[in-house]
Length: 499
Ligand code: GLU
Figure 1 (cartoon, rainbow, N blue to C red):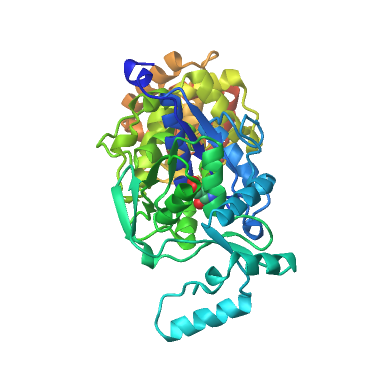
Figure 2 (cartoon, rainbow, N blue to C red; figure 1 turned 180 degrees about the vertical axis):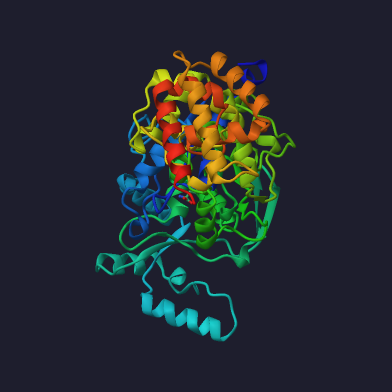
């Protein structure tokens, strides 16, 4: 690490997702920035699962988050499945702690029990709406004396705990990206911090945990800006030091107009892209490409540099993050992914493309993939391109579209004749290699008056089954004589059948 890093105090950062759905780009970038800051300062990166909204918890979502972070290379130092000194790291396992803290707020006069029934609250809201007022709690239970409240609690009356927001003045809260934000207190509601089931809301749980887990920097979505003053008031009510808060810009759909909707997410998939980490993995994107791409959205300095994780750790700066929303640009993702694929050492790339062959039922040996990778690398955007470009190496036979075997400007019988001739030339070569095949076929092109594209085009489609392929003669050398001859023979037959 450089001198810059050594001068920073070790940060404790956290990624605190709710397990309510797939890990998406917004989450991945928040986690990345938190990770970069922790690593840059020699600190710790923590995963905390915020699962107190039990009704919204999706089975499997927590595991998907953990798998996604690991795939991205964002290994957390503390978390539900790795433990750590501030555990447990799942909020539903920390409920006693929140109860204690809610009581503390009540005792210090910063919160109060509220006994209003859901029916009363609904009526209240409807009346407010009819009067064209913003719906908010009207403060009925705020006026109860502590003695009355205690009696009702003792009688077993169902209640929640609400935070008592100040009514006068303004709350000034500092966001590291936007500077001081000042909001008049009279606009605030007395938010519920502890629900009647004894579980906290985000407002209490996250503040308690960030304090207990000694989080120094809270990096979270700018969707929390609206309740930021409430959170700051809660932290101040406890008398705790505030962390540095940074509310990260949101991602907009590719057009730049609004956030991605379900429909657009589904459209993106059709096009081979996605905003969900697990899809990106399946679509053949690399963690390096995804991190580089989403890291630079909101990074705040106009750099389009290709960076690996170490370089991002060196260069990241929480001071340059930008508040402006970033439109998702999938073309850039393709660019970064292709670039990172080209940077991978051959053995690494072999290991990463192999599963795509295996899943397609093709047994691709490391040895053969190692030979093939140099032919593919330049042409790949995603890892699964390898299967599309090079599946023919491993198939017993190929089944080209017969029409593709017909050379440009020629008909089927003439193309069949050429294929037959090519077969004869190659069958005469006991050791069919690039060095022997290419000059012989070029000589045939010369003497026949045909052009290279016509002859090599037929050969390419016959041998690879596709019109676009890695370099032909290098590929043939890997495929081997026997398969090449069999495929040419099949091509002659297919062409002969075209009338
Ligand atoms: N659980 C919150 C969410 O998923 C996290 C917010 C935070 O990072 O504090 O939106």
